[in-house]
Length: 259
Image (tube, rainbow, N blue to C red; front, side, top):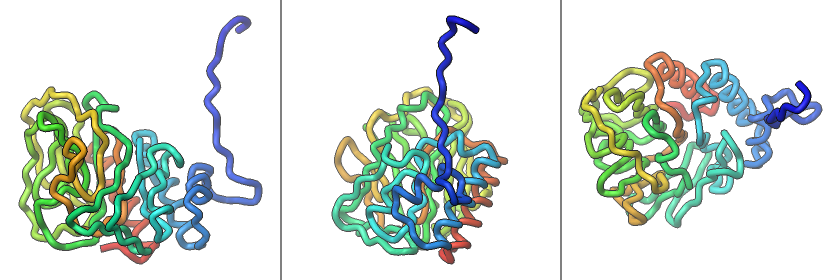
């Protein structure tokens, strides 16, 4: 219509000669991924997440691919935006990234307050040991987002989703908040615990860290678990959590690092 302003959303196109999804290729380029198996794995991951309508719910996705700090830092969803910044003390390999358990953390640059209510956090652990560490999160004292495999998860306020159903922290963990009174934790796509207590406290307005909690800029409960995937986005349904696990299991299996 004449006189109407139309906003045009830029689209990514794969380079000529590339059969990869354009978003996957943007990550491959930014992270400097040259290995064919790794390229195929991340390309299939993007395709699977888009097919399951999970991709559109994501703000940050760290595939932890390439074996170096510079490649592990890159945000697959939007390379160059919310890339992680690592402190000293991390070990990086083709299997993942491992904090030292005392002083290491990675700043995502992303605050949970980007969302008003609905949120999820996910973490793929390759370490069996169960403990009280923060694998990721942020804590202001009055409100918290945290993912602590086989212990508890908090997604706003201070009310935890407690779960002690396993002594093995390995696998793909998701904490999902779909509404103020609808929070759930999944391990490998299977529900571990729920909490329906209504929590209306706003989500933390400080950056989420990986490998430790961000306690207003101080390290909280640092972890030593090897991490092979991280994401933050909108809350996920049971079906989406199951489909997400299937996609991640395929991804980790292709890379020969599934547990």
